[in-house]
Length: 223
Image 1 (cartoon, helix red, strand yellow):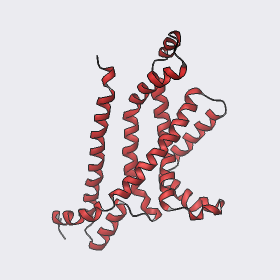
Image 2 (cartoon, rainbow, N blue to C red):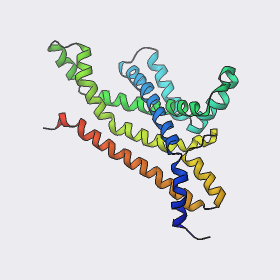
Image 3 (cartoon, helix red, strand yellow):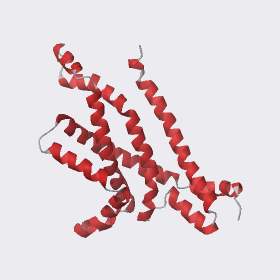
Image 4 (cartoon, rainbow, N blue to C red):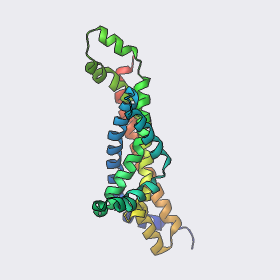
């Protein structure tokens, strides 16, 4: 059975059908990870007693546990401890599991971005009569957000690729559809190459959007 580029074209519409599922999981998981990561970053940046130690433990744990194990813990393990969660959907478990894991990376990215902003700006703002809220909302946070763009974009790119493990929970995403198509026709090379190119295309488009965002946010810093 030789390589068939024509079959790749034939398989494309069937794989394209599940792109929304992959993107839905990635986007909602990213929103959750940004929210949790921001809270953890603020706790780590301000160094709240006790909460800072808990944040460090959270980051260490979720960084150390593989994403697949995290999904299994949530979807199969948690209902054993909390019977009320036995009705949890696979989609919900995928979003929460991936979101909580990626939050551990974003927390350190956001904290590093806050640290990267010159601390003297706060003292300068206070000397001019600005409140701490005005200083952070108008000066420090925008600069930190700009500094965090590359790292945050990398996390989202990794998240898009990591959605390929959600098939283990019974979710039919791009990768799961590729498995079904390949199994039905035994065209493994063509099918997996096609789905790989589709992941690449999605990530390439996202990279272009990030470049546009970086260019727009960098305008105030251009002299």
